[in-house]
Image 1 (cartoon, helix red, strand yellow):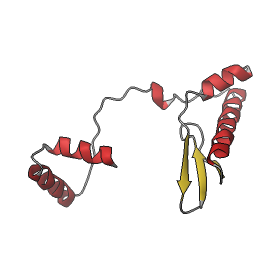
Image 2 (cartoon, helix red, strand yellow; image 1 turned 180 degrees about the vertical axis):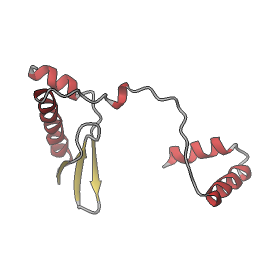
Image 3 (cartoon, one colour; image 1 turned 90 degrees about the vertical axis):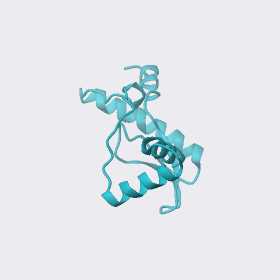
Image 4 (cartoon, helix red, strand yellow; image 1 turned 90 degrees about the horizontal axis):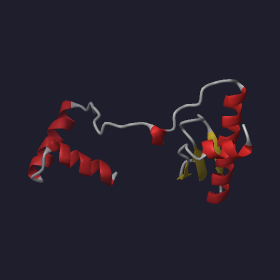
Length: 115
């Protein structure tokens, strides 16, 4: 693979850089490709290092002859998922939705969007 092809492929994968209160530094991750990540005190540098790490991971995957994981952005989502909660939580959510004059689904969607 050429460097350009690797960069184009790397651009398809989600990369996250977030501050970690626990570690007192920025943590960069690409969960679709790597379990670990990179860290540092400069957010932009962490992102740049993360991009390099993703490209290196892609090179290793290809060198090993493995198939690349599908990028999350390419996956189709139905918009439905089952969430299991304790009956007491279900009752409390249903009561809050009723008090707000909303369906349980609408109330939960609004609550999840705020999170």
